[in-house]
Image (tube, rainbow, N blue to C red):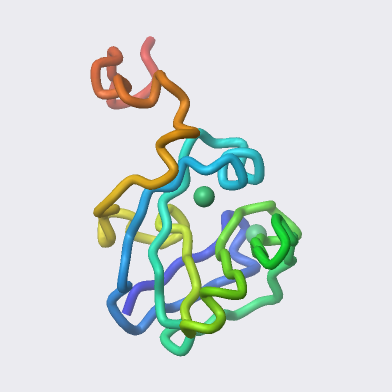
Length: 131
Ligand SMILES: [Zn+2]
Ligand SMILES: [Zn+2]
């Protein structure tokens, strides 16, 4: 059982089965809606997820729906018509309490990836903020 939540804790969720896919997505919808250069998604069976709390929903495309906490703004889930038909839902990996428990397997929509994302491992790195 994997658990996750939004930043303020108003919305909590549990996923009881292994995700089918795990992906880093650079599409412009993910970038604009999150204000982040990339989002990490785990595709989970809808029937395997239990959610406590009421998420707000933003319609980000014709059938795309992005769920987020209306109090703290944390993005949590994505669904669209195709995922609905498959009985699946995308869950943001970074919203899980242990983000290490699901590693992305592929990167998608790299056509829209900021060019500097490919060299971030070469940047000077600090375990905490540098002093
Ligand atoms: Zn919240
Ligand atoms: Zn995306």
